[in-house]
Length: 439
Image (cartoon, rainbow, N blue to C red; front, side, top):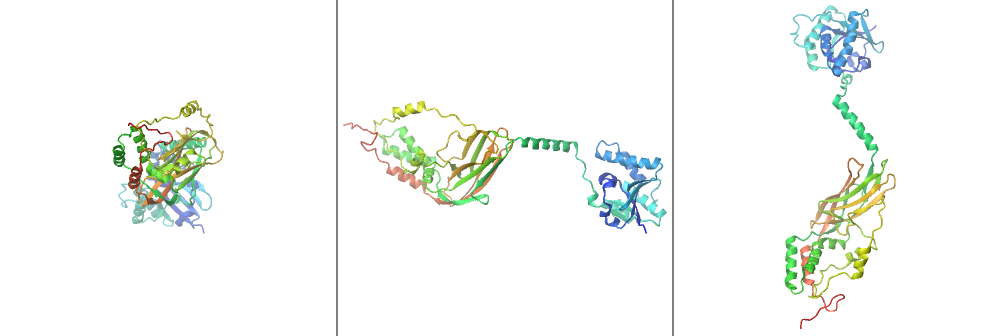
């Protein structure tokens, strides 16, 4: 025996659900065993659709399609519009001649009028399974209280509204951005030597001397060597004192970090700039090659320069001045990396390198940095960032690693006082020195 059901859909079923031909009717529990579904359009629904069909949006377009179907059913020869022939068979019919049952509801809302029509149709066809189809909980309660059993629209029947003009424009712009990104360099930059985003280790922790401490130490030198002190000599002493904390770390074991960077895009990076930045108390230094002249200097004992005698001449030998004036740096390779503005010889907050044209798919570049800390804390936390800029890159490529260092404290003030105490007058006959007795 064929089972049938007669459904009075509310207006939202036509406007906010998938097209009737696309709905899987078996996903509604009430309709699982039904062979024939009759969808009945009553006059309140047709009135709402008639009003909405003039809207200049997707609601208006959906309403206009339903209105045209209902109009053909009303003025045409066909009594019904077939939506699906099997599984189950679904047919759309108009029942605009039905009037709501009198005295049943107040009929102040469209849903009440639809329920009233369903009740009147059920009263006239007692042998039929008549229901009210809706997704609205309030409308379901109205139907149930009026004696019309509701059928709940499953959530999966609901259709997402089509994008608005603004949303479509956003989608177009996003597509343009994706297209532009395909024409940009693309970087894979990662920190090596760690399985997690944290680098841990130990090192000496030495803060820098304060301006007040340096001023007091220079005053001691000025008073001890009043006859031979010069602004130039005191300036050299001040430079040593200001860099004392990093000089101490130069001579100790330090943590280092290695960064691997590759241009995996489809085009070269133009005017590329790599910045390796230490955040917090973390500063970065460039490791020196074994034959670098500054390496030997770093290993020398830290000391302050001896004060000059009154007749010392402080000048570079003439031949060195001549060599420097005639030096012409070799031309730069546009595909190579160069420190900007120059290779740093002391720890810096930021180490920068530039490349005029960073070729894509040209292999991985590796950058090493020694880690220095300007702190005397027993536990030091910071962060190192690698960021890459380029003329044809819309946003910098960034990578980070956290740094956790157990610091071995150095009493920097005591070390500085020892250096000042060790300063002695320059001995007669010292290479490059000469003195003349005033007597």
